[in-house]
Image (cartoon, rainbow, N blue to C red; front, side, top):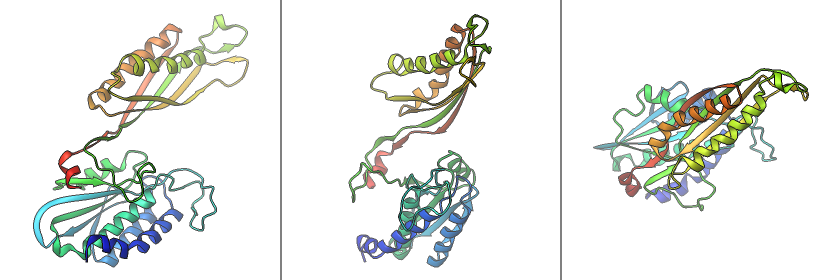
Length: 306
């Protein structure tokens, strides 16, 4: 039976799994029941597996003939989002939801496992199935790699549903596909006081606001238009009362880009702007920058094979 026919045969199986996982979303690196269910399904198929990266699972399907090792990867964690739907399979874990499609990814990979296991006598080489925890907090991939999940792997394909891609199509073009996702944290220190006496204070609200605005000059004036960059401050907390000048400010944000060299330089560029802007307002500021997820740049050879 051809792969397409096997896919049709297992369609209902994949849908039922997706609805199951959607009902029981779990936080990053705490996907205990999700991992248990994955292992139960692999046991039913007779596929060998090991744990990796805590709650992650690495399953292996060996073909009848020698060859290269290809890995297929899906993430398994959910988001801290309250689901506001009336579907019968809506989340049963309060405050958690598979809002990013990882329930689909798990089910797709288990469906692929079932199909590949059925045709393993036609496979030249080995297929590894990577069920990765902690995608949302950028910890799971590193943990799985540390546990040897990619040892001996010649090529890897990661799956992710995408609303902009038409149903029935797969986007596997070579080159940059998904931007990096890094996080930063900024602390601003001023001097508090009464709102009627600003001359005796160092206003952390003003300094923080200026930092937010000046950081955008990195995008508009320090990077090439041909090298896209997004620098977003998603959180700004400062102040305690309407007539009190704030002493402290705190910001969190993210940077996204495709250029690995630009990514390396961003903390240096940002720190210069942040510290000098704060100094202009007589305040002090520090930057903590976490390199989380590198850009996805599809390998031309793997893209052609796909």
